[in-house]
Image (cartoon, rainbow, N blue to C red; front, side):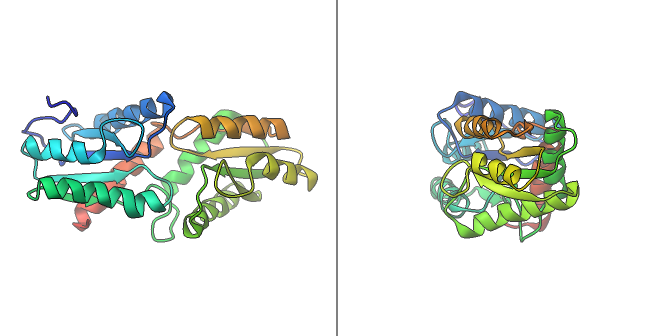
Length: 257
């Protein structure tokens, strides 16, 4: 097996390359590897390979080149991103273009991100967030805060807002957004505002795929402000595995890029 973990032919399924943002925190890479194993287990015969845009090797270009060298002619790239911001619009296409330059015979299709696509919030994503929140055990809540990593992209923030609105409808309580970086408010401020408005039990739903410093900061800040619970990242949850596979199937069936 090549250095990047690319399987040799034959395989029964089109290889899937998961592309995570990357983090200096080793827990994030471990979570991506666990997700890759879980997706592969759910789709026997389909190679599922993790990659990262930064901080962790291999990168998506290396993995795609490895697939081409092993004889594969098609691959599906799944951006493990919750918003279609800079990394989806620039970094992922650049990585794919670099792979195609080295291996023009390789056809690469790229799925939608895991967050809202075409304005629609996936029911499976909401189910995954709800299950993680239930695991945190908040019981009855008066208000929710959806805590995301943060972005300067207004359209991406709008997609986070749509998830918050969907959570509000699903739980029957108001839900606002907080960010760990790049945009206000932070989780502590969001929880404090709800409590000042009379909400006695405020829970924080973590809009993260993997653990790391951002999630840690949300947990610390939310608890300091009096949140009754903070959910864990989605990691390799069954709901996320199912969402990844549905993104793959929609791209392959649609024959899109």
